Image (cartoon, rainbow, N blue to C red; front, side):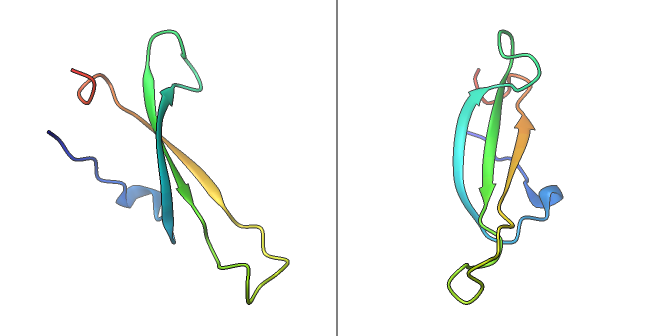
Amino acid sequence: LGTLDIAGAHAHKPSGIALAPSSDDPSHHMSLYIVDRGLDNDPYPTENDGKIYEFQLNGWLLA
């Protein structure tokens, strides 16, 4: 069991998480992807500020 500090991403409203192959070395590394919704688009219908952050795991989570 472990934890990963995502504070460095400065996500406004983190809302999703996925474990998938790394974007720069998919055959050898896995990454954790976190979705940030940003501003709610109900009061801001033209807002499109969502982001995806990638955290390399370096094997500690998969052991």
